[in-house]
Length: 474
Image (cartoon, rainbow, N blue to C red; front, side, top):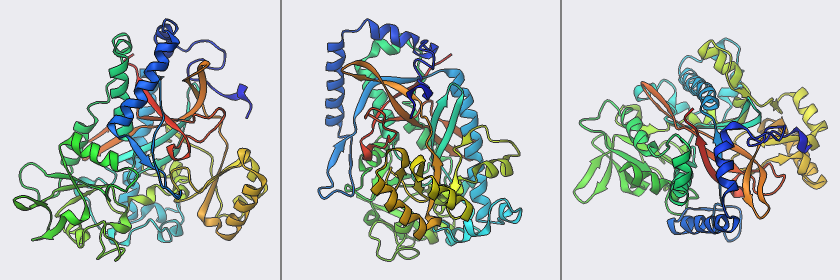
């Protein structure tokens, strides 16, 4: 990729310092590099002491790793954030309306805007949810929208995370670490806070309590357990919310309610923030081998005895083939043109698109429709001939399992390196909370950064890191 095509969020395209970074640059220039290197090491030690790790799957040792943290913040102006927020809110409203529709009358299918097979043949579509009305009408209580930037005013949605979006604990710990190490930076820059997220999360979940609730809603977080890659986040959020952290064996159905074991017997739960996939949620209704879920929870849910966040069946909105229809989905349910654009997408299930993709594999990014974490994808421009040949076989064997997109010139932001400030590619995952009467978007979100020079892969499982994301008060 031609480096001259790339938009740098600190320097733009003309090597003229952009206003959001002006106060930071003035501070940085007055700092001793050796002090900053010491601070970088201190940050890593803080993360290690806090226990912020993730498991790397697919390796023999399945080791726990520290996610690298960079001390240079990514800085977004208040005006930029206002524009982004409007687009994020519009998209989240459309996703919730789409989920309600496909589990009820399927008007979007009847209107010919989405092929019926995209719903009925989608493995993430959950027939158990047909006709079910979730408490408050909310399907996606917590959403993560992955964004990339290519120019001053050009953001694209890379994917929607409507099932169990992760990473918010890193957003919060990144900010806590920066506040601890560089309080003077926050004194000189008016940065919007993110620390209220756990309080807002609990309030938002409680607002979605089911009809069976009496008194203050009881909220719990359901985790698969300590061996899950995101266990730190599950325990962190439960602690920060003042909610119970539970596993499937802590829960049972008692008198038509889902109840958790306590020292005083079983106590009903009103809202369960689950971090367990649909298939493992209820061995009576889904995978009978599951040891992670609660037998009968779906029957309680359908009867209005508990709220499950996010609602079972929301994974269809994560599907990358459905993603390709998001412009139509937004327009159909909001009556407006999308404020945030999709990345142009080729659906390999369509013969003409497949032919184009096969002819241009070396220039495209190819992804599994249900893939995540940077796994199961091909980045054509950096792939070997062997990788491309292997992916060609996969595409021909199961074309409907893949989509393809052009390789975007992702924006860069500075990281602190031995050479000083060095540009690296980034994406952004803002976190959105949805309740019956409010959509709350945390200012900023999680910036993931590709720490290898020139790399476009930002996933922590693939060697990426994170940094604090600042939204300025304009």
